[in-house]
Length: 475
Image (cartoon, rainbow, N blue to C red; front, side, top):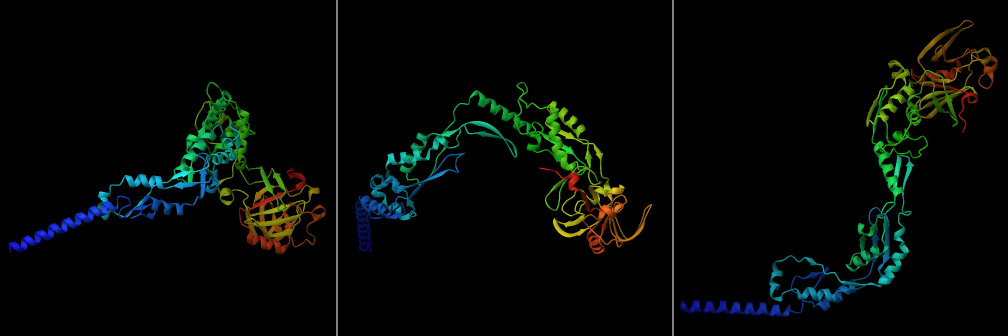
C-alpha cells in the first residue's frame, strides 16, 4: 500500500515536471514568434516572427483611393486621391516589433481561454508629401463658398441670409489630411478646425442685424378669419407687407424693427386676399390659353380689404406678434349658394361670345363643345359677361317675355331670367347669327347638345361668359 502511494507521487511529480518543462519550452519558443491564437490585421500570426507577419501584410497592402470630405457646411464636396499617385508605402515591421515586445511569452497560456479576436496594428505610412500638397492646391479649397460675403436675398420663401464669410484654411486642410492618411484612414472627414471665420465688418454686422429683424418679423402670427377658413399668413406673405417688390426694408435703429407704411401693408394684403375676393373679380384662362378678367357675375365674395388694412396696420405699428382679424364682407354668398359652389374649379361651362361657341369641361377635360347663339346686342339684349353658376334647372318649360312665348325642353338658368336652353326654331348657329337674329339674352343651343349638357349639369355648376374684345388680359 505504501509502495503504491509512493509510486503515485512519483508519477504526479514527474508529470508536473514534464508539464513545466513543456510550458517553459513553449514560452521560450514564443519569445521570438507570436503566441497561440494571435490574429493581427486579419492575418493569422501564430508562430510567425514580426518579419514574417510583416511580409504577409505588405503583400496584401495595395494603395487604394482616399476620399477627403470637406467639413460642415461643405460636406457635399468630396475629393478622391489615387493612393498610387502619392507613392504610398507601408511599414508593418516596426509596429509589429513594438507589439511583440509588449507581449510576455511566459503568459502565452492566457490565450488558451481567450476568443481569437483580431488585433489591429496600424502600419507606419510613407507618402510623397509634396505631391499631396500640389493636389490640395488644385482643389483651391480656400475658394469654396466664395465670394466670402454676407448678403440678404429675396426668394420664394421670403428673405434668405447668405453668410459665406467662412472659408477653409488650405494649410490646416493639408495638415489634417496628411495626418489621417498616415494613420491609415481612407475615408477622411475634415473637422471644423479647418474652417476660418474672419471678423465681420460694420456693413456686414448691419446686414446680420437687418436679417435678424426680418426673421423676427416673419415669426409673427397673423390670422384672417374668413367665412369658410382661417387664413394664416406665411413668411412670404408677411414679408409682402413690408415691400411690394422684395426690396429690403430699412430698419428702425431704436426698435430694431423693419420700417413699413400703410401702402406696402395694403399692397401685400390685397395680394393675399385676391383669391378670396372673387365677386366681380375673376381671372379665367379660356380653352385656348388666353386670359380674361371678368368683373361681373354672381359667383364669389367681396371683402372690405381697406378696413382689414387699417386694422392690420395698427396692430403691426403697435408691435403685436399675434394678430387676429375678422374681415368684413361687402358681398357674401349666402349659405345655400355656398353649398352649391365655392369657386370655378375644373368642372364648368365656358361660353365665348366672340366665337359663339360653348365648351363643357369636366375635371379639366373637354367633354362637350357646340356652336350657340347668344343675345342680340343691337337691341340691348346681349348676353352679359361674367362668372355665374346654374341656380335652377327644369325640363319642358315655357319661356315668357313681353314679345315672345317659347317652349324649351331643357332649361338651365344662370343669371336671373337668362339661361342655356334648346331652340328648335333656329336653323343657323355660331358665327355671326347672333348679330342678325340673336336671342333675348339666353344662350340658344342645338337640341342634341342641350340634351347632353342637361345630363351633365347640376345646380351650382359654374358658367363663364366672356368676350376677348372686352376682357382679354394682354401680356
